[in-house]
Image (tube, rainbow, N blue to C red):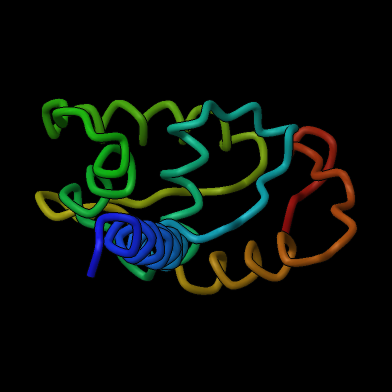
Amino acid sequence: MNDSELIDHLRCENDILLERIKELEDALIGTVSLPLEWELTRYEQRLMSTLINREFLTKEGALVALYDDLGKDRPEEKIVDVYVCKLRAKLKDFDISIHTRWGEGYYIEKEERLKLKKLLEQEDHTPIHSSKEGSLL
């Protein structure tokens, strides 16, 4: 194999690996389009998408979902608690609850998670109102 063929082969291999990484990230984090009304940051969106797509999320799993694809060192595990606290505050008015399994991680009740998934999978998102205006679910 000459240099040109080797370069072509490596580029093809690289493209395959990049596509596989995207598939794995989608499986881990999910591709949920969240309503703008929630006013979530990029990291909050990633965390919420992961919570919606999983029955239970450990703190380690949250760190992987939030930071591992960025090629940076991970922050302390406590940052997950901070993001969950911020998410809870922002989603409170929309009647969305994130629960804690102390010392292990976080989850959204199965019934509520399924309702959220169904709502978010609609092609045409209807406005999601806060509990002050009416219930989300």
